[in-house]
Length: 496
Image (cartoon, rainbow, N blue to C red; front, side):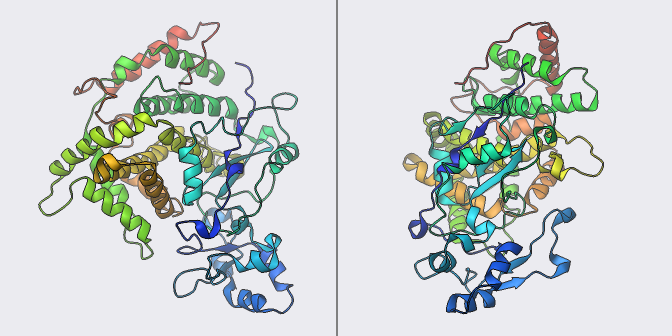
């Protein structure tokens, strides 16, 4: 397989903050970190009312609290929120006084870059957006072809874009600083502060071929979305086996044969026999949704989302898991599935953005800059379980919200739900760890459990069966890989 060139989506560069017109207030409800460079700029400001306000609002972080998990990131200072849990530097018109009075050059890195997430990717920048921002959620979810909208899929020399050149190519398209800079914790999904300076050799082996195979699979509409995700799980488990030496294949050869298997639909019949258990799925969704409900700063938009979800699945006095499951299934089949069948790009885009944001399937700890001291290969199956948990939670909430709004369910409700849930879950540093522990406890972290978590009945599914043993499906996949190992050429994976 030829060396793949970088796939660097540019949709994040199209983001424009809408400032005071935004329906949410992003300068409240969470911690706003201040980097040392910005702090020192503030210390050198001449005396003025805004300087006085900054001095009273920006606090140095105690050394004991300066380092995050594993000492990988330092929070130099923080903004002390006011009694309303808002940034005190926010004007009554919901604009930032620092930018308005001092200029965008005085913004902290977090305030200047949110909601953009930038990762180093072989000397280039790979950008995504955090959907806790309503305008970012609209851009990502509602763009018909996210990767084609401003996509940079080109290379200089041998399939490689040097960091400086990539930064220059994106700088020309970069937006002006937000009219209302929006702070964010971004502790679990950190942003890069400048163009990466590492070279391509620092990426995990076969990073780009794997990334392209993953994104092509997610966009392959020949399969219903749950089957694409099941195939993605299978891909991750096979790559783990190769990394451990259990499967004696090279990654390029395996990816070639996997693409043949996907293109020919060899596993479609076997996947249709996988188990369907909406009660187990709903139980996990309810438990995932409840993980952070004990937090004291739950925002009203998320409360609205939860109330619509619970009403949409028939929650009320006397409700049981059986009755909730029945209504949940009705909401999926009558309202959720028809809507997303008409607009399949929405959930595809959610997955694409999450894949790039989380550096899937390598994960942040699997990338060289964040590698564990043991240098043990990351578990891609583990990364898929985290991706599936996020997707299942978001899909489950949307099913309930669709049931609540019925025929009136629209993209407005989708954006509201995804944004409110993302703001609640995405920025909590412990959510993914707790979500994975919940999957393990529920015995839903294996391939069979994850299939149950992803699959629903509806017009996408021809019939319901009790399911073949998962080993039968996996064995079928292994047979198909063996049969295609001698193929000299492989057809392209359909893009829908």
